[in-house]
Amino acid sequence: MNYVGVEPALPVVPVAGDVLQALRTHVSGLRTSVNATDPSNDIDIAPGHIVDTSHTTWLTLHAALTKRLDAPWAVGTDQGGLDQGVKTIDTLYAVWLIRRGDTGVVDAIFSTSYFSPAMPAGYTRRALIGSVRTDASGDIIQFFQHGDWFYYRSYFILISVTSSSPVPVPYQGYVPPVAGAMKMPSRLDYTYPNSINSGGHGYLQLESGIHFAFYNHLSTGNTQAAYHSS
Image 1 (cartoon, rainbow, N blue to C red):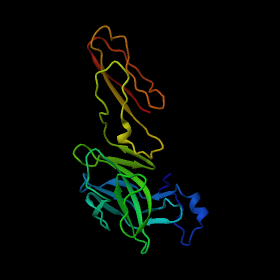
Image 2: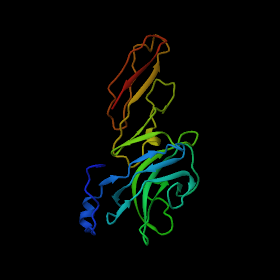
Image 3: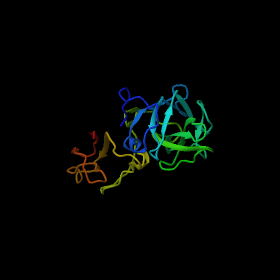
Image 4: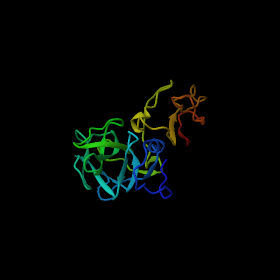
C-alpha cells in the first residue's frame, strides 16, 4: 500500500534482511503523474522510497524526477527513460525505480517488461512503482494515481461487434499483468435490430464469472447504453 504522508521515516541505520522482507510491499511517496510540459511523453516521479525486488535494499529517490518515454534511457531528470527499442503505440509500460550498485544513484526506467527490465550498466536493484500506456498515436494516456490505484481519465472502446453470442472483451492490454485487482466503470451500447430480438438484454461478464449486474430492455430499432461501476 502507499502510505504517503503517514509512513515512518527511512531508517538511518542498516535494516536487517528479515525486516526488509516484512516491508517488501511498503511504498513511501514515489507518486507518478503526467508531466505538465510534455504530457504526451514525460512522467514525473515524486521523492520517496521502496524496498527492491530482492527485499534487501532500500531505493530512495531524494528529489523529484522527470523521465521521457520517447528517448533511450540516460541518467538524470528530463532525460530519456526507455530501456530498449523505441516508444510504440497501444503499449503498456512498467515504471521501475532503479539503483546503481557502486554509487547508489537512484533513477527510473520504462520497460515493456513488468518482471525483468533491461537494466543500464551498473544498475543492480529495481522496484516496480507504476504503469503507463500509450494510445494509437503513441501519446501517454492521461491518468492519475491515488495510493496503489492508477485511473485512466477517459473511457476506451474495448470491442465493437455485431453478434448475438457472447464475445470476450480484451481488457488485458489496458491492465498490467501484475495488477492484483481492477475497477472497471463500464458502458455497454447495444441495439435490437428487429422485433424478434427486442425481448433480450445486454450484459457484461468478467472472465472470473462474476457478472456486472445490469440489463436494459430496448424497443425495436432503438439504441441505448447501460452502465455499471464495479
